[in-house]
Length: 179
Image 1 (cartoon, one colour):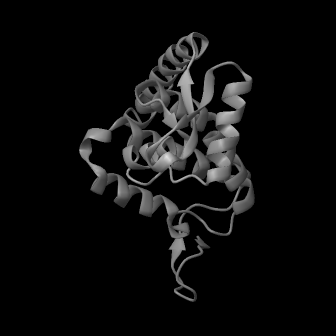
Image 2: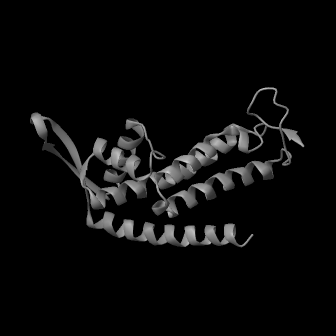
Image 3: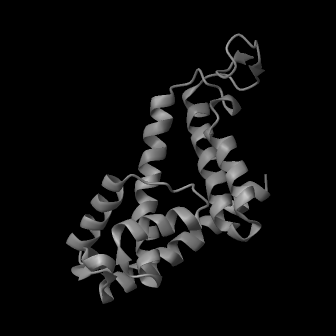
């Protein structure tokens, strides 16, 4: 058994030896748990907050494995999720970037708390791909904000991404429940 990172000097052990296969397995476990969190939104934010807290603890997996590789893998997965999630929010709530980001954070019970640069970079990519349009709108107190709207191409892409997500999450759920 290998000692895992967590409480310094706790002597706690974890039965999973450190291998590249286990590094990938841990990353897949994290992703599968995140899929579970997203697909069971109706459970409520307290369940999501508890699961998110667990996933953010290094203790649950063998902390001696290459955390940077797991982090890179999870960052790539997150990048693949952000843009479709933003499209979904914009389809229901055309608005400015800050409000879109806050709505995503609210709906995910704080799980998707993204930096402004992450949100605006993703919105810029979506606009460059012709999936969203933006224009400057005057809002309360005479401030001007760039507001984002879905294009027809964006609606078609969103429909494809939602169907793809449903197939993916269904397959992931089958793997998890039929183990």
